[in-house]
Image 1: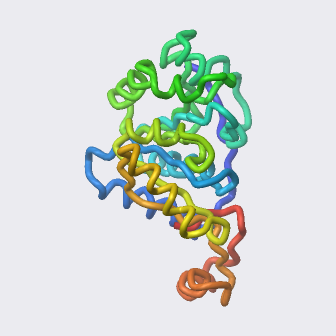
Image 2: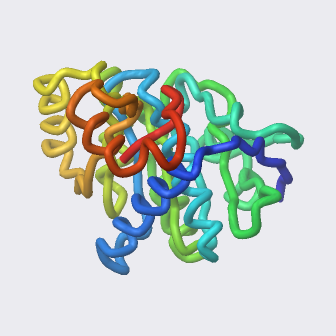
Length: 237
């Protein structure tokens, strides 16, 4: 098994609590909600950060969790790790170059494991729709309490729907003010047609300054004066 070290971000108290709330909502969705995919409408909505911090929150709550980076086209997950030599990733496993244990990385966060995307491949959709990927999910269900999968934006490519239909549930990350209601509904429709079980949405990048929209007024009333300013790269749910 490979070894990596996490790049710790100084999240605000409010953001940390938001991830705990998201984690709790998933836990109360049922004991069978153990394999969860995360996607978004478009790139740059903060999906990968949400996925990473959600998986980490599960680990900090005493669970064994594996984060699978299934964005085989343009992954940014490595930004969350500061050191460690990684030889094999998901694409290596899917083409038969290694086994799940070889592609898995143990992090310095107890109970937190990850599989990076690996080298780019010309056939990501086909690989994610393969028997080997299905076998990987079965392996992870046996080995870990939770499997969290970071998928490409569903508004750009179909990969997220391919992965989502194999999972117990799917979370859709939506960037506040960047994605229209109609576009979000279209993306939800794509997930529905693929038989993905959508368990909820994460409204990300909500401006918390007083007076800036409904959510800013609502959340700012209860949290803003106690926990400082909101920064655009943090997540609110």
